[in-house]
Image 1: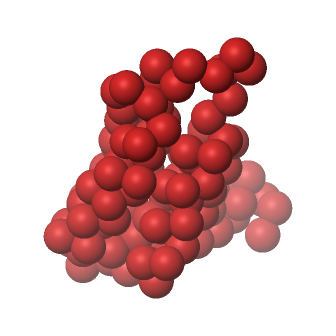
Image 2: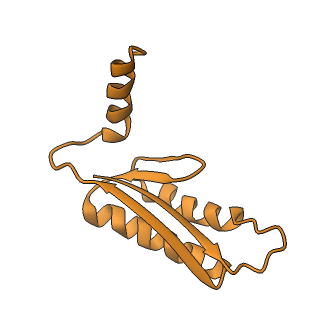
Length: 101
């Protein structure tokens, strides 16, 4: 399965409203997990089993919690039993459909 998520604190009290330190803490959890992953400006996507992915999402959320008075979490999952390597394969199929492969 693929799980795309975005987690960020609110109520940080920072004048510049930056959440980069908190996001870095969450992304470090993802990278330390060993699961295939990709981070873009809006989401981090991980690939693994249901339990693996949601364990990482939970730990990443917990890593953000100390940075604010509340935490916002957005999650989207692509659950496709029997498929692995979809983090790259989905993009390869898209490129092929666009004629870029």
